[in-house]
Image 1 (cartoon, helix red, strand yellow):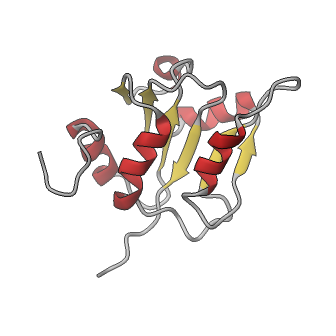
Image 2: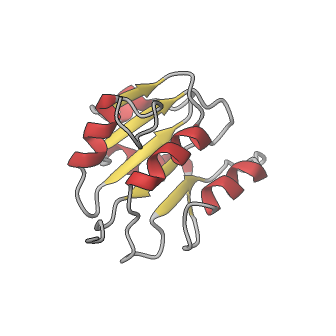
Length: 138
């Protein structure tokens, strides 16, 4: 255990977050997401919900301030809708607007992400892509 690091963050996830550079992306995917067929670097977070993962990760992770949408979500297919609480959770982590990406375009972006974190989230369209920024010097 490390002081100040949530126990929800596995050693593998902590290492991945540290290895990511400016502009790299990471996907926090729901339990339904085809993670293994989208990306070779899949980190399992079974049983952990994405809001809890975000709460644990965001104090350690700087979002990219040089782009308009450092947070993206999968857009639902026509006839479906996103959970409004889930949208609010995502909006709480960024001052920027959230980009909504069509399902298959989101899959394509996931293929090029640094990693995909497969969570235990069961909400439909519970998939978020974050783009890492530069950590400010303190």
